Image 1 (cartoon, rainbow, N blue to C red):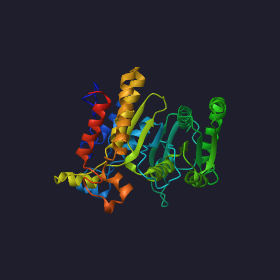
Image 2 (spheres, one colour):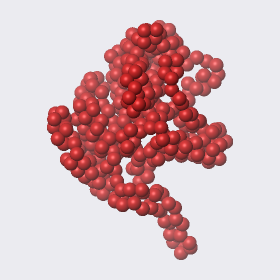
Image 3 (cartoon, rainbow, N blue to C red):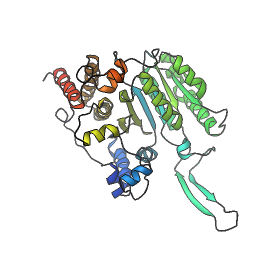
Image 4 (spheres, rainbow, N blue to C red):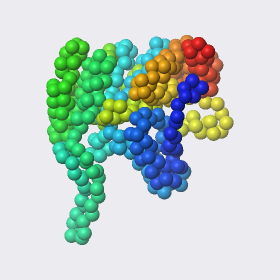
Length: 371
């Protein structure tokens, strides 16, 4: 779909678990540094090893989440948005418009203690044994600067581009320092930088408690940007994906603090069960749409940075073709299951296998490109 139509130089980093283990995870760090250098990255789903995977792959250690490593180097905000197809029913039928969730890609439970950092410095954990023996010390993070404000700029800009209202949710009644800091910084940046633009567009910014916000989201018709802290966004984005139909119909883009660097990926995981079937030589019906959209989001941004309207148009066309293919009744098993129920789905009647689905998209794409 991509390479026959786009002349693009690719810098490839193998984030497969064996090579991450072989390089002591240096390849993950290198990929993040390359993203900063080239401003656009397209990432495949990756494995975060647990005890079983350590044993299966005979790993040197239980390596950290590559997404966590990359996001902690790049910073920024992860935006997730559903891909809407008219014929895929929604678990929340009231959601007639998309909802974009913006997740602060740093901190929280992933690096958490409830206090505020307002200047550069090192954060350490110290363990002092009760018997008076030598204390132990670990460096947790070297803060280059204060704060969570960068996420506000990302989400404000995104809301203005969409012309949608922006909501921010925290639990500042409980985590008074940490969540209170988020609330105060977001409000301050909005008032100083964005309020007049929002007023012109007749959109608004509002802070809500996370529990109240979840209830409001379920009752809403969609059409807004929801700014979350890291953990809240991690959980709620999967709820949104399923509510709109499928995790296979969800885009995920990390927008970095500089505003020009992005990393696009599929919102779903590695689909291990399907891969095991593939290894046995059996055909699978695996939904590639989110992975295709990772490429289109990356290429569209490359086109924007390079002033290349043809590349942007190609990316938008491929996205439209993916949706049209599903709306014309050609789809993978997960999507057919949303319509007919998985137990009732029959191959080549309700759904097709992976390669046939990709062939169908290619046929529609060639037609759209006038080939």
